[in-house]
Image 1: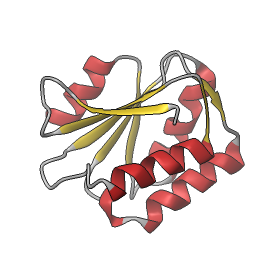
Image 2: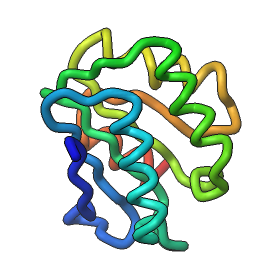
Image 3: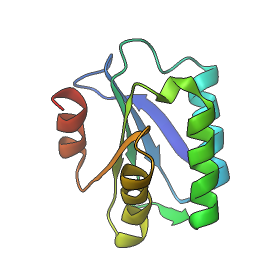
Length: 124
């Protein structure tokens, strides 16, 4: 799997981090979320997930993005958590921006740094 899961060191009970490595597509993303759900990584104390796309090669188009969004809609685990997406290029930034503006029932927002993502998740 090209997505590594870990707890955020400063807030391990509140933030889960998913580091995207190498080439990643929508199937990898959905499988990774399945891993998170199966392993009960979204606990009652988790406030948010940082999806760190910095340095990865994201191979996804609008159809792939819709697959990921539909997955979110089907799983209640995502209803009350914030999904921060750390991006380093416009091609990656477009997806969380669309998610933030088109799907108001999903709390998703793009960021340029992990620190900014942490602040949004913890402080609001």
